Length: 188
Image (cartoon, rainbow, N blue to C red; front, side, top):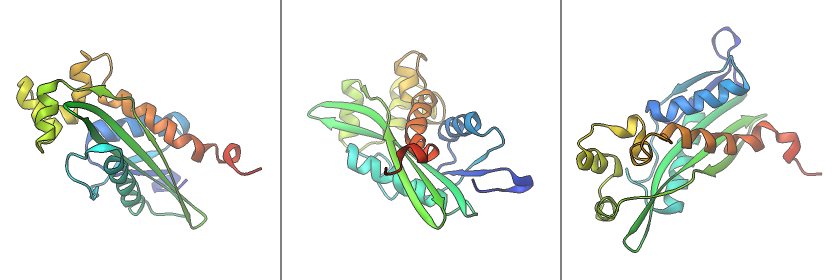
C-alpha cells in the first residue's frame, strides 16, 4: 500500500461526499486499521445523473483512476463510486457501481462491482427520465435537503433499514476482494 505521513497507507476516493468516503474508509480500516482514506474532487466524465449500466460504470472507473492519480507511491489505491439509474419503460431502478484501482509495480489493475438495486417511485423515475438528477428530485419530493450526502435515496425509501453507505460498503468489499486476495485470483 502507498505510505503517507508516519508510514500510514493512503487511499484516495474520487469524491468529497461523506456518504461515499465513509464506507470506503470503513472497508479499508477493517483490512488495514492504519489506512488513511481521503476524498478528492475528480470528474466522473459522465452526466451528473448517469443512466444505465455502461454510463454508471464509466463514471466509477473514471473516478477511481482520477483518485489514483492523487495517491502517490508505488503501491497506491483509488476508489470511484457512481450512483446510477437504469430506466426500463416507465420504471427506474436505483443502483451504484464501485471501481477500485490499484497501482502495483507500475501496473494499474481495476476491479468493478455493483450494488443491489431498488425500484424508484414512478413520479421520481419520470423526472429522472426527463433529465433531472435523482438527489435533488428526492429532496424536493420529500421536503428534505441534500439526502445524497447522507442516508441517500435508498435510506429514505427503506426507512433507514439500508443506507447509502450500507450499500456502498458491500460493493467496495466485492470490488476490492480480487485485488486484496490477488494470489487467489492469479492464473494457475
